[in-house]
Length: 119
Image (cartoon, rainbow, N blue to C red; front, top):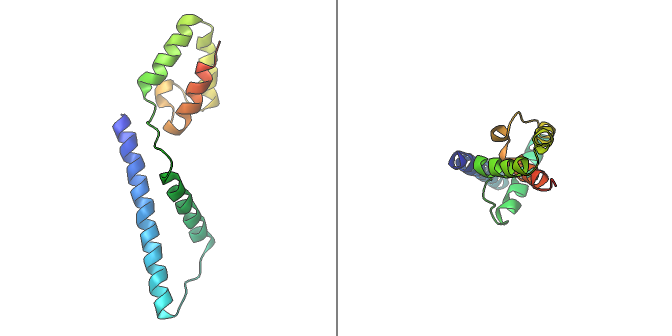
């Protein structure tokens, strides 16, 4: 399962890079033809997002949090205190997830930190 989310992330990065290359080629061609293309708000937004993605590429890659990791943290907390079961369900609701395995990867680190903080 983790391999699929990693593959999905790589595909998204490849698509963003491909779009950046297409935009650069169009601008390059327009520059030498004497016509500069008009930049729409959508293109500006996309270019801004591409730039943010490129900045993120320099950051160290964080390994995705697996279902097993999350389940183990939850098991440990509920074993220590049965009342944590209800608290964990409330935290899942905060992240709009019906259960731990349905939790999106981008929300897992925050969820895990909240569960680990339970006393």
